Amino acid sequence: MKNSSNNNSCNGNSSNNSNKNYCAISSLFFFFFFTWSSSSSLLSIWLSQTIGLIPSQTGVIFSILSISALCTQVCYGFMQDKLGIKKNLLWIIGALLILSGPNYLLFGYLLRENLYVGSIFGGIFIALTFNGAIGLLEAYSDRTSRLSDFEFGKARMWGSIGWAIAIFFSGLLFNINPNINFAIASISGLLFCLLLTQLDLKKMKSSQYLQQNRVTLVDALSLLKQSHFWKLILFVVGTCIYGVYDQQFPIYYSSQFATVQQGNEMFGYLNSFQVFLEAGGLFIAPWFVNRIGAKNGLIFAGTIMAIRMVGSGLVDGPILISVMKLCHSLELPVLLISIFKYNSINFDKRLSATVYLVGFACTSSVIGTFLSPLAGLCYERFGFANSYIMMGCAVFIITALSSILLSSNQNDLNSEQENALEEESPSELTPQEEF
Image 1: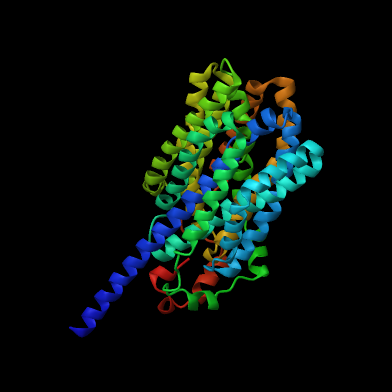
Image 2: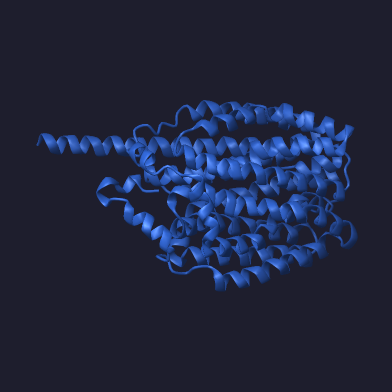
């Protein structure tokens, strides 16, 4: 009786700790995305209407942002895999979130003085704070969800809700004064830091595992020898075009209305509605991806992405273009859940942050570096609609190739991974301790 009582108590404590960590991770997602949306969701509009840049100049800025994000993501991914479940990097990100408002004001000042100096400064701070940090937060949360036994997608859902709430008001506030959004972003960053204190992973039985399975640079570099990794890179090369597509889409969308101010406001409402749908999608996406498989989930997301891009170029008027924009709420949840599940199936779980940040986020940054200025020039020469059709066709082609190349065998780990798994004694790890 005594032993049984102790076991029940332990199970209860484990459940309570799991619920606490789910709430903490969900709250971090909410305020991270709230900060990001408040400060950056209307970035292209801010650069165009407030700073006065033309599309090709905006493309240069986004290219520099991509280069900065690339460097940040490589460092963030490897460092977090070394740290395991420690929160050191999250504290740094929290401090940067608090400074996001003042940094945006300085960014704008420097752009007016010198385009390239401003772009370099903006690229570094936005990459460290948002574009590079989101991959780190998602990878960290995916690992925490497996240790705490909750669905990553249901926690990530709160990030979409945070973004949606912020952008619902950001378009209206932008028309009053863009600096109001920057002030709100810094306040939200402060709340992120306060909630980070509530994330307690010390009770997890993972410290021994982390000590015995420290990640080395050799482990990270071994990814380059794996065919699965390069097949994934090819898929990401195609699908990451959606980031380039989204960069200046608000400018195109606002041009569909009688006045730019009305377009800004309506884009805020549309984006808010889209992200609320996205949050619902993240709730059901784990079930959907588990039914069709991780590979099919990636192909499904890539196909919807291509349809959205081509459709944006073929349709006309704010209503139909809004419908194309809303397709993102169907595509992103499936893509995000599928990429994490695909990675956990095909790669060493200790390298989850490195695989996600290098294989997915960094590849997106590399492609964005080259395509952002090219897209800006295409918008000026061919127009937004024709440029979107060309982007969508490229995504269709690469998605079709990926449907052949990506691994469909959910137990198809390469020999190096199998050997690494065999070296781990099953008796030393509980299900909660697996990465």
